[in-house]
Image (cartoon, rainbow, N blue to C red):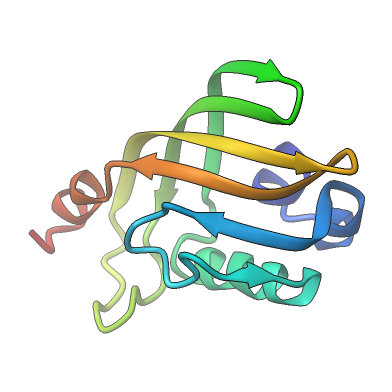
Length: 127
């Protein structure tokens, strides 16, 4: 989270992310249900950073077991780019979520995620 998402170190993707990364149960994510290559994973990140270039995840808790790590987090950022057909608002957001990361061969090969997108839309004035 720190290197790839918060510091935007794209060169770290291959270090942490498996070559086949599947997005499970992430409603409203355009990549939901897809399996991504490293290049596609980076494209997904750049899509997110385009809307919120200062996006930051503050991990609140983590629970691990053999092939999964569950984290809760607080997401903050400022909307500086379009979100689909919605124009940038320059408004700050803050919301909570939970992600379960799936591991294979000691790398993250997918996630299951739930977060409050409606709060984000309200904070941006879209809902």
